[in-house]
Image 1 (cartoon, helix red, strand yellow):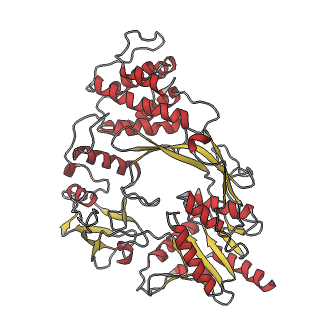
Image 2: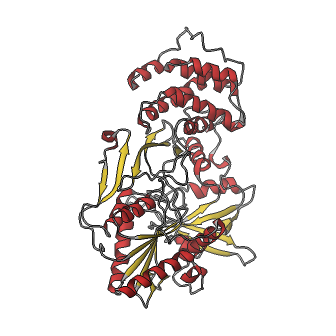
Image 3: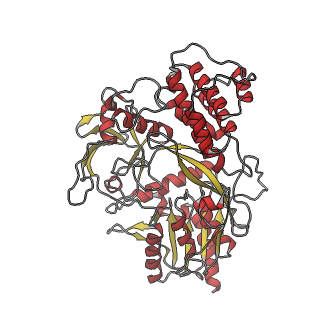
Amino acid sequence: MTGLVALALLAAPAAPAPVPAVPALKAPGVIDRNQALNFARMVYQLAEQVAVTYVTPKDQHPKELMAAAVRGLYEETGAGVPDKVKEALAGANTAVELVEVLTDVRVLLGDHPNLRGARSLFAAMNGFKHATDPLCGLYSARINSFASVDQDFGVGIELEGVVGVRWALYQVEQGVALGRYAPAGWFGPVQRAHELASPAGATWRVRRVIPGSPAQKAGVKPGDTITHFNGSEVTPETANALFAQLANPSQAFDPATGRPKAQDRTLTFRRGDEKPFTATLKTEPYAPESAFGVLRTADDKWDCVLDREYKIGYIRLGPIETGLDAKFAEMMDGLMKQGCRALVLDLRWCPGGYVDPGTRIAGMFLKDNSVIAKMDYRNAAQAGTANEIRTPPGGGQYANLPLVLLVGSETTGGGELIASALRDNDRCVVVGQRSVGRASVQNVRDAGFAGVQFRVTTGTSFRPNGKNRMRKPDSQPTDDWGIRPDEGLEVPVTADKSAELRRQADLHALRPADSRDALPFDDPAADPYRLTALVYLRKHLEKK
């Protein structure tokens, strides 16, 4: 069925000829049926888009996605799908029939608190994961363009709870409350913005601090608790109204630039038993750091020499942001001016990000026209991307530099793409533990309400040698997936040790430039990954 035909059917009055195989699901309830019908139509329209773009070898029928949406609704209420609903779904095949079943289900579920407002849309559309994969789902339009930051309040702080569905729902609810969006597919009354429940709760605990941000420069750390905002105490009585101000301040614009003027945000932090401290952070534009060296210098740059005797450099990559390749090139240039003879490239906590800067970073170590990845799309023409990614022109500056990669159980997506490109082109050895095994290529579709997007998997990335990189639900340890360390270079560490190393690395990246406090991550001998890499490279360099 084409999209135009489906839309025409959905716009038409409900046909008075139900399919006999579909049992009646209608029951008295507090939900207006017209509202439920509008909701069901919105879910079906997205199901049609996903069905023709999701990476499967054959067309997917919207029926599978509508059944998954029903499951998502019932899961949100804590119940399983009743047999009579399963029977109704089994007998429904056309757009009108499927919409009718979902409408009936929504009426049956009534005014459940977990389905009020836009929650029904989130539950149903995120339920599509049951017919696709767990990476498919709704997410809100980002506050900024950074791959690694969703909401940082303009100062580089992420709060616990202000993430994922919980945060996306708040943005939709706030947008409707402020009149930015119509309450399409909405159930129940629209609350006033300052009355919406804060996703951060009444205790605002810092989940993450963005390196390079005003908060990082002020010395804020994960785990700190915000007790006051602009002089007002954060309490159970004030938290909702204060969070509304924090998340959506009234903006004054600079007439010269047309951009919002920087604002001062005065926050008081409590850290354990230490004396609380207050910092005034300005909401000026900043670039999040995602490349880190050995020591942050007094001028807020990185010294990247790990071993001064052997002249071994070290760079750790975080999220692959736009512009990371330029920063990486700058750090490499500084290393080469210091006589760098080898490099340790740390990808242990690289979660991926944008493809282009990752490709350019890999290309610096490869010969021209080297294959970085092979791609397989459901619809290559629709993806607008070639079936192979090769090194872009102008790379290869360090094609002969001895190189060791560090990978681990959190090396994901774009980090794995860089690692496989360098490994399969015989440009490195790999130290560490097996990586995650995520190679899905995703795109976004408009979900049809409040600027919300739906992320759908449209393809798969393979290693340059053509081997699989994606770990599937039925993948075995002996199967090809992820990136394995080279023989003899596996680092046997526990999950607890890995988590502690990451915590140490994060604190190392957050240390302000004017701080000389010693940190555990300063000592590579205390990190079995870096120590293994150094031992290998020292032996290699002694032979030269």
